[in-house]
Length: 216
Image (cartoon, rainbow, N blue to C red):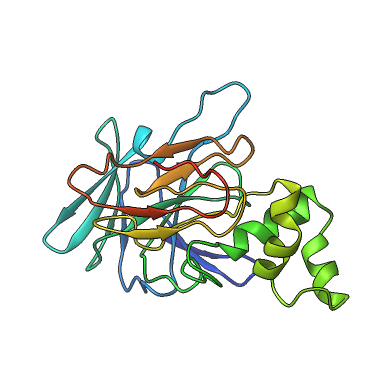
């Protein structure tokens, strides 16, 4: 196992010495750390794949084992369970495994409104209009931008529910969007959503907003 540092961000990465050596991850901080796994969730040639189409997670004696569908052990996260998958919207071809207590992925201005996704999508598709509106004093946050402008432009309110296992109550916050009561993986470009679990045994309360909002 080797250690490398991203020269642009200072992020430290642990890398297995070869493709057959499983990575042993210790001291994983559930509030700060994420695990990125290679994949290709979006491609014009290769069909869409969710995390569960490529990897499996097993919790054994308080640890989490990550394996490919062929059975090859990829990594073991010591002392951590309950990791969830999140398909990156800014880095094509990766899946992130995070705890629901991760501070970055749990930053919500309002219930079910995921501000980092909305801002990144705005930068790539709408010319950074959110920051321009904030600088001009028209709005004070990305959520306010969505309520005043985004929803009327057909933008979705970008849900990544912080607790999608078990019984949940989810709220819609505008004209556009959808409520999903189970963990999901979503394509970077196509926005195709695939459920990671079936939700069997869960009782979810999904509360829509002023227009028709699809539930799943």
